Structure formats: structure tokens, C-alpha cells
Image 1 (cartoon, rainbow, N blue to C red):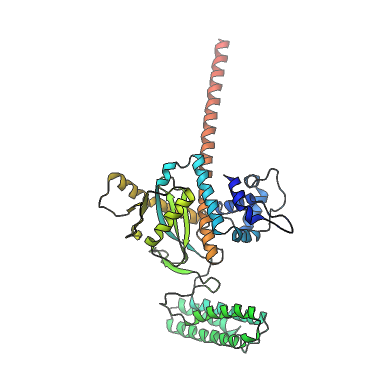
Image 2: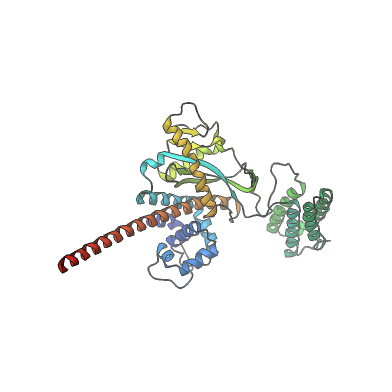
Length: 416
């Protein structure tokens, strides 16, 4: 790992003009690597670092440490400091490390596989009753925190209505369910108008915060079942409803992510969030551009699925699943290899943190997606290291056995 490059590029983010000195860049970068390689939360990665000497050595420590390296909440602030450019540097360093370790060759970057998936957000399933009840709770709390007196807060009636909606839906009594939702929507609308009338009494900064909350609540109150730009979470307005054609999970709530891996090795050489749920073919050019920046080499051939139909990138050959015209035997083998990216996505969701994004906002989506790719590369490098160690152990044991056999033969000859 090129830690010197990370320290040199992160130096501007880790300056400390007053107070205690900033943390070492290698410590923060190493913790982010370990977090996404081992599917650990901020608290878990810091606590495990304290117990694991190998993790401490990886982050640059020489002696065993007996105190926490930082407060877990500091990782949130460091992620914001380094930004999207910083996490892309972490991904680029893993690519160079894989090249130095012999996991990939220079020619491996000529052929890549590109696909998209959904990175779900850490939100509850967005039912109407739950969204309405959460909206009411947020407005009541806002009024209490700022000294506003509400005519009615419905703290007893509204939770009962929200619970009853779920019971009616379970019993398939949809007429009663819709009536209960309508009543709950009326109660939330009353609280919203009550807060809106008193908003002018508050300071300007608090008014801005209140207007933002009321605007989101207004979207929840007025949105219909088949509206396009619906709000699925009060605290995460960037969440989108994405359908990927899965029978077990028809709709996922999060953001679309595009990723690129090498054809043979499965190393992630590009990963980026795509807000707005764009058509897959429109994301291909950005993905190839990112691969060229991170790997210092622009791919020549790209394998994609049928969702990229019609996509054209100048100077890049695009092979699509199901393509038959002008396909040679070599091209057919590469197209067949395209599905190798699916297990990589599966490992990133089961072994990594791609299955649930806890970071806030569109910036959190962008940072989390790239870090998931870096964590996947770290796991590949570790598996390569384990293979070499096991192979070296077998060689050493074989030589020891051979030496022992020769020694026993010499002893037997001497005795004879």
C-alpha cells in the first residue's frame, strides 16, 4: 500500500492550527479500509482496532496500543473532510497495490465489466401511515424545542391510528385502512398548519429549518400513489424507489450505483453513485472516464448487459449480452464472462457494506459507494496473501519432510 501517497494527498485535510494535533492520515485511511473490508460500524472498527495488533500494525503503529485511537464519531467528520476525491484516492491506491502484488497485469485493465446495482439506504419501509406519523412526531418535537404552543398534538390518537392501519392491511380490510389513513392525514395537516401560523415568531435561522421540515411534510401530505418524485423518508429526501426486476425484492429504496471490475480477476476499478435513477446506458461514459482516472489506463473493451442497449462511447468497444452480429469466438467468450460481476456485487453486499448505507445525504451515498469498492479490493488482496502463505507453508513442509527422509536413510546406511 502506498501510504506515502495517501499522507501526501491528505496533508491539507489534516492540518491543525490550534488545539490538539490532527490524527495521522494513515490511521484514518486504514480504519476506513478495515471498516469496509470487514463490514464493521464506526464503533466496531475502533473497538476491534484496540484488540487486534494486526489492525494496529496495518494503520502504522509500531507498539501495541491500549487506548482507543479516536472517538467513533470522528470517522464521520473525517469522511466529510476528505470528500469524494479522497475516497477515490483510497480506491486508486488499492488498484495500484493489486498491480504491485501481481493480482492484475497491465493488460487486465484493457477489458472491464460494467454493471449497475442498488445501494439501499438505511430507512424503514415507506408506508403512508408510518411517514405521516413520523412527520407529526418531527413537527411536535420542533414545536416543543422552540417554545411553540400547539392547539393539539395528537400524541395519543395518531399512534393508535397508525397501528390500526397496519392491522386493517393485514386483515385485507382496505376500505377501513384507507379511512384510517385519511383521518391520520387530516390530523397531521392540522399540526402542520398550526406550526406554519406560528413560524414567524421564531428567529430567521430557526425559520429556515422549520420551512424545510414543513416543505417535506407538505410533500408527504399531497403525494399520490403513482406520483414520480415521491418522498420515501423524512430525513433522507434523496432516496429513490428503484426496480431491478427481482422477483424476491421488486422495489429497493436507495440510490443506483455503477461499478466496473476487471474481466478475469474481479478487481473493482471504478465505482460511483448515480443519483436520479438514470438509464444504465447514460452512465457508461462516466464509468469509463472514472476507470481511466483511477487506474491511469482507459479500457478498450467493455462488457455490459442488455440494460445498456444503445450506449456508444467513442474509442471503446462495447460487447452486450445477447449480441450476435459481428461476434467472434473470443468475443463470445468475453460476453459469457460478463456475468462474473454478479458474484462481486453479491460479496460487496454480504461481506461488505453495500447492502445498507447508513451515511446521510447525497454526499454520504457517493462516499459509501466508493469505499465499498475499496473494501472489496482489500478482501481480494488478503485472499491472495493467504494463498501465498499457504503455498509457502506447503513448500517448506515438503522440504522438511524430504530432509527428514534423507536423514533417516543416512542413519540406516550408517547402521548397516
